[in-house]
Amino acid sequence: MSNSEIVKEKVDENRTRRTVEDFNAAFNRHDVDTVMNLMTENCLFESTYPSPDGLRVEGSVAMREFWSKFFAANTDAYFELEEMIISSNRCIVRWIYRKTKEGKPWHLRGVDIFRVEDEKVAEKLSYVKG
Image 1 (cartoon, helix red, strand yellow):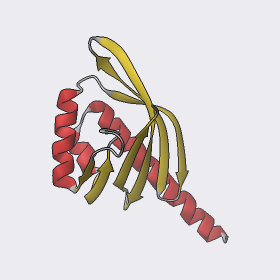
Image 2 (cartoon, rainbow, N blue to C red):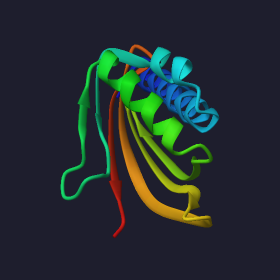
Image 3 (cartoon, rainbow, N blue to C red):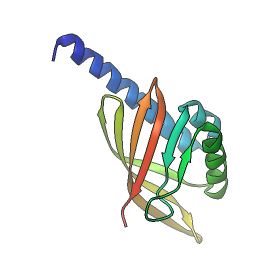
């Protein structure tokens, strides 16, 4: 790999990192507008529920509706980062999802696999333990 290829890969990885970090920060603020500004028009999201494959949401219109409903139903939900692994435009994030459930603190551990295009999230595929 040439020096210019190494530099380009590092630049791509830095952009991927920044995009995913910005996305997760907006998610934790429940900021639908910023979340959507960080997703492509043809974005794809696969949630962790229902089993076994999760809900598949495609396109920015459907995605905005999904996030709006999700944040309204999960008012104190947030993701705590455990680890981030980046390769070019791909990012794997291990996380702990925390919220209140039935009046008590609750959490779930899982992984998101992101694909970033032009500094926007094109795919977010979510998986959980359990």
